[in-house]
Image 1 (cartoon, rainbow, N blue to C red):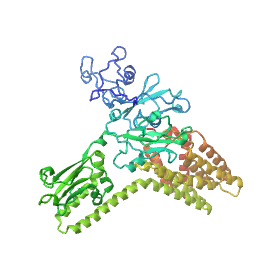
Image 2: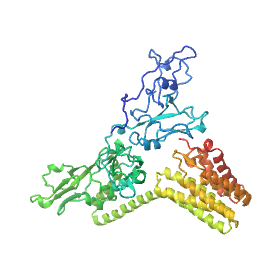
Image 3: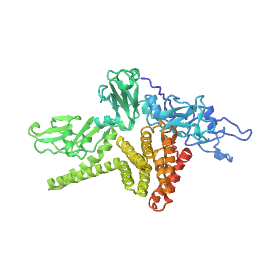
Length: 618
């Protein structure tokens, strides 16, 4: 299938040719990168890592005695884009509306077979072909892993119309590390056909890399997905494919199969350490893979079958030179030598090495094999081997449990923060219903801090999940919806209606916050509207006239179509982390009335200066 990807050959050192566009007449000799990119498009990378200058006769610039105003690779050229696997130019957006967004996530959806999930470089140009550099321009995003985004609000006169192309690993253009085809679903169940990466990783452990760089889908009869006319909700290597019957205009999705392109290093073969589980006592030596599953700490990983085995005696002699007859000598089954088949002799004591297709598999298998080796050594050196075998088995199980416990903690640390946020909201609700207004407001502000932390922790620990997203939404709805609305509660019918409208606006905001633009929200995040309401309530002693006006304003902000940046306070500039630490300190000063002014100014600054102060640019 043609994908539009192209490859070009370049010197392995990745050094450009010499360029001479100026001479020293006039003010001097200027060989600036911006000018050279315009005059020699495609011949120089946009992010050089070194530069060298010579006179046209070949003398090094350092030997001329000249003083240089500019001599650095960013202005000035060895390059890092030595992979010449380039995508076509993409221009899926224009600057009408909010700006021009040529992001990687949108390109993966629009051009699924023509771009990789993890590019190593990006080039940006106007549609007329003029190269565009990040230096000197105020672009929101300019990064190969995110793409490109230009916001009209950040530009004098608005954005131009841009196009982008990506440089991908060579394995995308010349794939050799490609999995077999997988078909886990059919269009007659669950309303369509979804071949999701997370599901396939669970169903076929060890057969798919966790970070594919490419994906291809075909019908089970072999027709490319692009020729079926089906509309795909998802089609990218990081999530898989999803075809929903309801989106097909009266027809149903075809039945699809997928295979993935993985990084080359994942496909390299690997060899385990030597395995010696059995000895030649009656009836013989059995090194069978299914029996390893009950002997090793990580049996689920041992169950993935090797592509070859090597067998020697424990002293190192190749098995085929021993004269023994083997009942089983197969990489798919293992190795077995039976004593009564040896013509009066017995089998020697053998050890085996397993060769696996995927290098990454050996990395995951290494821990359990290393511990098994230690256990084997202790058994050989100890006369009371049965006792030590039991003791070491217990020790290994405890270690395995500890590993599982740490993994559980990693996956659920962010979820614990979301649950803590929810508990703060529930406690605030109880305090409001029992008349403890001051405590109720401060519990909401503690939830504010927890909500800012849970996303940062999830991303830092690589533990983002659908469960975590749902817990976060439930917590936000409890704390910043229901708990916050109760500060508006009085005996008045109109005030109670306002309470319900506020809760509904938070619900709407949580359901429809996605803008389709990386790092941007649609509508004011509810944590800031909540913080403003509770802070004003604390400062005014619950003045309902002020709170009613403010609540209406916050509702309008939340349901508006305005864009607000994802602040990522704990993953951004150092001063934002200081602001967060200050928020923690203010909790301990909650008995001092002006302490909540800190949160009020923090939240108002997000509304007044969302992009200038709080944008999480990459």
